[in-house]
Length: 276
Image 1 (cartoon, rainbow, N blue to C red):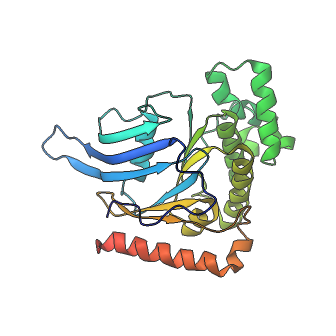
Image 2 (tube, one colour; image 1 turned 180 degrees about the vertical axis):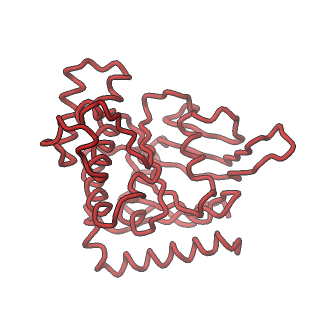
């Protein structure tokens, strides 16, 4: 099923606003001109209003990361259907997009401050401005006292905090996040989810967040889009009607959280078995 399975929750951005991201009948075939093309994404349609936080979940290989890469313009093969970011087709190097990967990708010869400012440096932001902004973001993620430390002196979780600061420092209206906390231990992941929620609440970026963690998707998102096994299709678009602000830890005692978890788990099983 390709249509949205549920309406947006009350309090979500109004439908009248132009979508920040829009996909309509998006289809992606790799090697389309070759003898054995691979259908990765099949007629996927969904959109995000400005400031909305949407997670993509689904089995490995269902096309979640492919969608992110298409939104950035990093894939040079041409998809079918409509794909727009802020009303325009994707293009490589679009300053309206910041992309955070699973790995922190910090440069070992740069301090935390220099790493947090690196994206702005590439974009030509003057040194004083980028360092001021980067330091402010480091303070917001709890690394203000480690601005002069090199990555080798930082724990894995601290490195991801630095990468998170670098991403938000770009001040792009659209953030794409590909399992940024997937390799962290459970306690560190919960801490960084709360940090991300605080940053998102303060800056209200439009976020597409890829994860395999259902609890993470529920805690962070306005909606969760569930995809089937390859070729990736939309199984459901589930509104998360839990009130904000949220505490990831406190949600564990909320029965609505567990009801949503069970619902998403059932949908994932449906998408894996192909029982649509």
